[in-house]
Amino acid sequence: MTMLQLDRTNEAMSTASAITEVGPLSNQPIQDVVRSAGKELEQLLRQRAEILKRIGTVKQRLGYLAKIFGEDALTPEVMHLMGRTQPRKKPGLTRACREVLMEAAAPLEARQGLRELQRRFPGVIDHHKEPIASVTTVFNRLVASAEARSFTNSNGRRAWQWITQSNPASDILSGLDANDCRPLGFDSDLPDRAR
Image 1 (tube, rainbow, N blue to C red):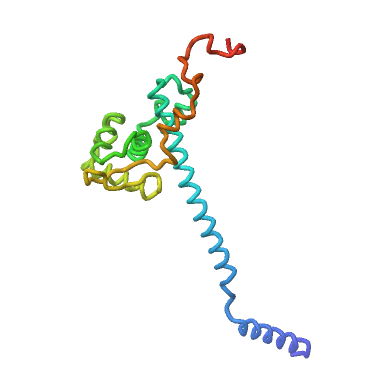
Image 2 (image 1 turned 90 degrees about the vertical axis):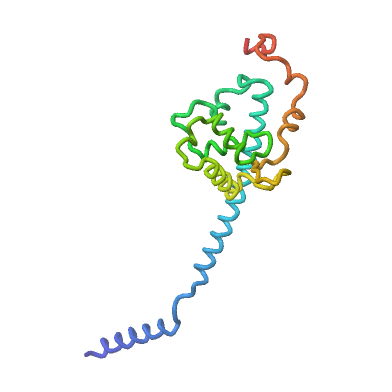
């Protein structure tokens, strides 16, 4: 072995021993990244819950407006966004339960939710062995995803309610002025450019 080869071998060995002396790489940068990503996920989930509340509030308001002024007051685009157009396929149980809770004027017990599902979405629950248990399970999942809340009502029974930001029934009417409550459909109601 030449002197040059010996020096290179010694350098390689000293480098290897220096690396092993440092020990395993520190996990601190990895922990920082995980902690940061966890905080971001937590923030996004809170934002999603707030957005779902706002969506529920707006859909409830539009539902009340449709009850007061008729379905014709809603544009086809709004009807589509609310899921009131003819779906391409039958809605699933979760989507149907979500809509029933969203549009309910008062908290629903499981049996009331089941009756409303059967009325609005015939057949969606027919293949379930225990329909009341299926509805209860879906309602509880909506609670777990922060879309609804559950509580014991005055009858001592469990009830579920869609989470909204405020009372939409009073907000709808408080946001309207006298001109908003005129009957629709007359040419005199249209702006000049629309006639």
